[in-house]
Image 1: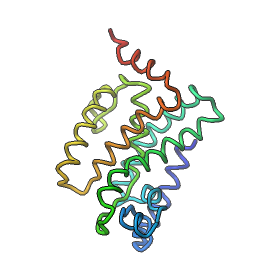
Image 2: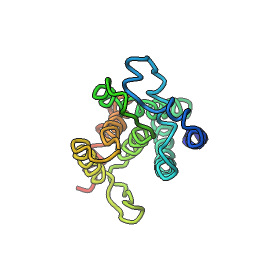
Image 3: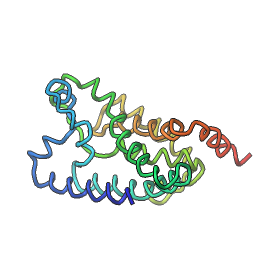
Image 4: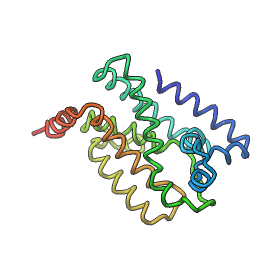
Length: 204
């Protein structure tokens, strides 16, 4: 499964970066380095390193649970032969889309750095919600919340926290990655939006 492959690669690179701070510095997202020194690889490489073990474990757990769902839905909708390619487009597209605003906002700030796959994982999560909007998600692994309600809450929280900028979390990346993940299936197959609307109002 492609989900397992991404988890494995991310875990190995993150582990090496934990031991090698020089490597971590070279791989992390830094908009100024990308723009002015043309280190474009950072647009992708930052998603394969993490700040610490909890950061890595949480991201990979979410990817594990929801990545498998997306693999299933993509095979169902697009066929076995193209589903892997579409999954990779979703994941790497989520990495790129999630950092557009940070790239613009911090293009001259050499002190702004970011790491982690949260933007891509948000894309996978929201693509899952798109296919099954009423499937419950478990907040803190305990409290069941319908996916579509979780989605609204997640976007509202990410937007508000992004404006406040009171912590070291890239909330804008979470927001943009989530939006990309929701829109991505529609870009591949526009008629899926009609099915989403049908699923959304299926309880009526």
